[in-house]
Length: 173
Image (cartoon, rainbow, N blue to C red; front, side, top):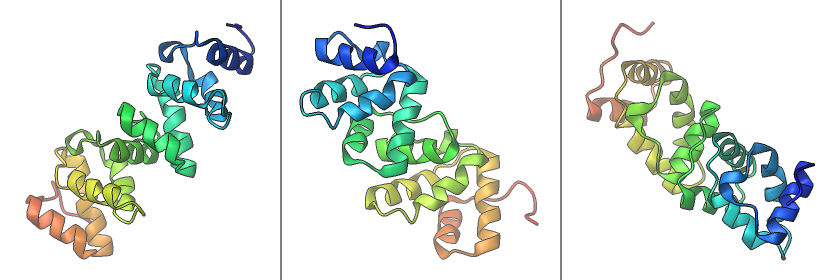
């Protein structure tokens, strides 16, 4: 496998079947994604993408999926259980898609993205977003949810707050 440049390393590694997921960093992800469109390399590229261990590489795959919602990438994220480390919008969307986003681990910075997901075009993501909002464990996230409800008075949010027994830690301004 060629060491450099990244495109040659990715393609030679795929072609020779020597490239493994634990060897693929973020610099190879654009080339692995492009290889999904090559009939001779698509299957092997998908295999490598499913076995990534580098968080920056996982983040790059999740970011690419969040921007275009490519079904192939969505399947890879779901099968591998990937969740981006950030930014919050990509973390939330990839976590909801893979089913690995835990409400009790969310900070207030992720709440707006979970709220956006309530209107996602995919029913499963919408349902998972509701489930996550019902399982918020951290006070800042609950405070962010309550503050949003005060501003927008969305009945869905009001129902989630009431059913979950959420109370803001301080008065919402």
